[in-house]
Image (cartoon, rainbow, N blue to C red; front, top):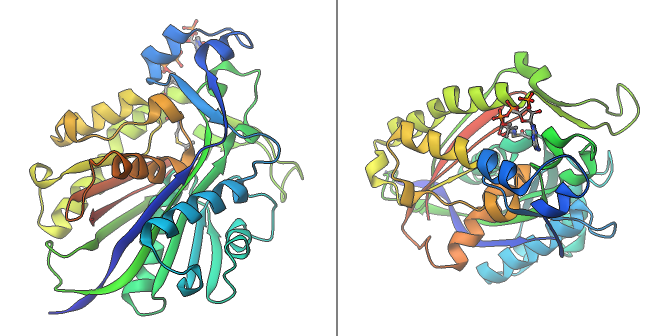
Length: 325
Ligand code: ACO
């Protein structure tokens, strides 16, 4: 049986020019390099300057992905930007990325699922591409979470960073088997009862301000390790694949301990786990495409490899996608 698949044509990323180390943060709040490394694995993060807005980062990541794909931007007929830190309440950051790339046709919109945003965006693009509603999609994860942080709150400000990553996906015929290239399955979940555990205390419809990020870290940690593995198990089940067949596990980069505990629980060998949290911190919807690009650039992820992406974000929202590169 033939069917359309969303095949990866290109990958790219971009990081703001300024890096901030744990010692830099220790000069501002009561924390230490040792505490941050031990609890999170983070050593540094990139923080955007005033001129580096989310769309600016997204455009640069998208340009790198389009160059990698070696395709004309004008052939992109779908742009999805996963972000919780849009330049403005509207228009969408995706339309600004579209304009920045000189694309004047097709559709562009933002998608908001916080740190799970990139998985949600890949799943959404996949539905467009495999139904014939679009032929080439640019899926961007771009964030300036530093703008949402309370820089006096040591329990949150040490965790996050800024950046952007992008994939070019193209509809191509497949056989309907797990050996096909492309997105093989995506599994999305949400449960809005957990709002108070991770949220921003403002917004245009409530306070009329942007607000600051608030988090009950321990509860997020517990949920992330305890519940999120369901979508990974379901992805294996849906495709008839196993953890042993996986070449690379590329999870949302929130915390090294969460990532390693999840991998251990699922029987995914540690050497298959792509980790960038040490260099990037938690860049929310940008963390997976940043990690994918890092592993493509250093030669780990190759054509034909089986790659699992997975994330949890505020809401809670969570999800996975299994991709044959
Ligand atoms: N430096 C030094 N000490 C600190 C810091 C800091 N930056 N932050 C907190 N502490 C202190 C606390 O005040 C507490 O002190 P106390 O014992 O005197 O009260 C102590 O360290 C332990 O704090 P805990 O919160 O119990 O530390 P924990 O081991 O749970 O680690 C952490 C905290 C790293 C936040 C962890 O809970 C975590 O990673 N949670 C998940 C967070 C996450 O992944 N969020 C992103 C989700 S994705 C999204 O959608 C945005």
